[in-house]
Amino acid sequence: MASVTGKALQDSVRIATKFSEMEETYSSLGSLRYDVIVDVAPEIKWISDNAHRNLKVVVEIDSDIDAQKTFEQEFRRRYKSLGALKVVTDRGLQIGDVAVIDISATTIDQDESNIKNIPSAESKGFNFDTEDGDNVLPGFLDSIIGIGRGETKSFPLVFPENWKQENLRGVHALFTVECKELFYRDLPELDDSIADKLISGCTTVDQVKELLLQRCLEVEQTAKEQATDNAILNQLSKMVEIDIPESLFEEQGRQLYGASLLEIQAKMTLNEQQLASLSSPKAVNEYLHHQKDNITNLIKQNLAVGDVYRRENLQVATEELVKEVENSIVEFKRQNQEYDEERVKEQVQEILEGAKVLEWLREHAEIQYVTK
Image: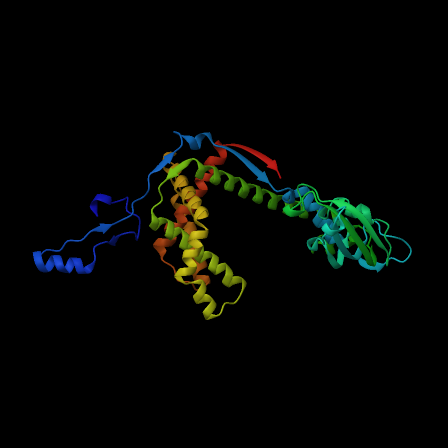
């Protein structure tokens, strides 16, 4: 093994010669001979020299995480929760009301034989908050404004080309809405007297708004940083060519599958038969097959990150490593889980190195943010 010292992948060494062949050779020649196969760390080929130093990344930010928008929605939601719903008796639907409606929809076609129901657009006893009008089909809210309890309205609408269900994009539909119940919110005065009900411990509405906005800004920043890291890692995987050894692919794939299995167990109780089925070699191999592209990309990302760490001579402070290892071991002990201290140290080292590389890449990359 001396010829591959420092290059051999852990746990990839295996004897290829059959035992029967070794026995036969020893019996006839009085000597023992066997072949050993080992996977070595793959060579990383960048598409160009110092490609990682000229990184250009476009980061798509979901509009749903916009801090100001999220703050306004959350403040309004908390305020509305303090109001009682009361029956509307003397008017039709208006903005701010809540209606219980039945919705049916069909396609519009000159040939009646081609008219079809649209099940995904239908609903019975749907609680429709008119302040959530942005979440429904454009034109739907405007079409039912004024509808009274017990009334029915029919109106045509067209599903936009960016509608989430692709099969409905551009479809002309006839909607029929029956209003079963109609309510308005009897809201309290929006003053400092309700601050503690909006957020416990607050004494003024301004304090509530400041605290909520701060929380939303933190969520937005975290999501933005995560999206940036994902975009950088995705771009890195496209800039390297790597011949990934089978043992490395299987190890990474099995780790991912094990993590997925733990998530499933955390969400639901599995009996012995279900657990045995999900842990079977067949189930694991099916996962490796279906997730091949994802596993391959993850390995390429990890190897590229490690290469950047070495190329740029980045360093993790010893005290930082020691502290994180200690924290991890405390967590294992708290959950009464077994652990290998050396393995924990390796994993923590990898995480800290990865964080250093991403920090360096964020500082040196050309990053453009677009809202989707």
